[in-house]
Length: 74
Image (cartoon, rainbow, N blue to C red; front, side, top):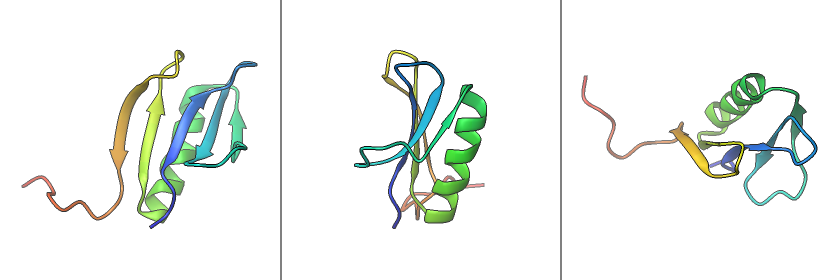
């Protein structure tokens, strides 16, 4: 199981993709959408969660790409 990937605002502007527990960003982006796309690819490859934060740092959205014990029907 890989590390959960976080899309977080950078205090100097733009957005960072960070693995859970990492002190440094994996990659920096000027805007949120490409950061989200990049983090989603990593979390899909690693079977981990994607956690997207708002500008204020609070969690806006979570996408799980792991082995969900309760997948939706249909």
